[in-house]
View: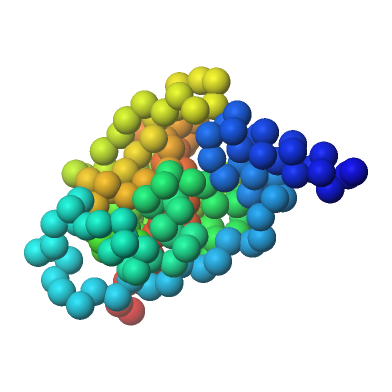
Length: 177
């Protein structure tokens, strides 16, 4: 009976909160798989990323990256190796390789996701998200439309913002030494 109750409660939470991300956050899923590096067989600047079919996205991305970038899911907190990344460099969209964040603007928010107090100019677009009984601001890569995370007004100076990003939606390129 406990298995049936747990399953019912998990499904109910997914329906109420609008995605499998909560199920994962409540222990209903395994550890997030690492994002497979995106292999670009063409110059990323020449592709119409927003015109790719669902099948093309599935072929390009790991399952976890697909769920986040294309289905607006959320990975489990503290599962991304990028959460603890401290080297200087640039964070790129795992979908289309657009540069999104400079590591100099990364900070430890204590939330379990890579967080930044600002993004690179022109890299992200925002939209309202009303899935959790309140309005939040969701953001996406401006080039491919891939879901990255949410922005909150509880970050450090100078912006006061916390751009809370799914690690699986990012790739990191360290600066040349």
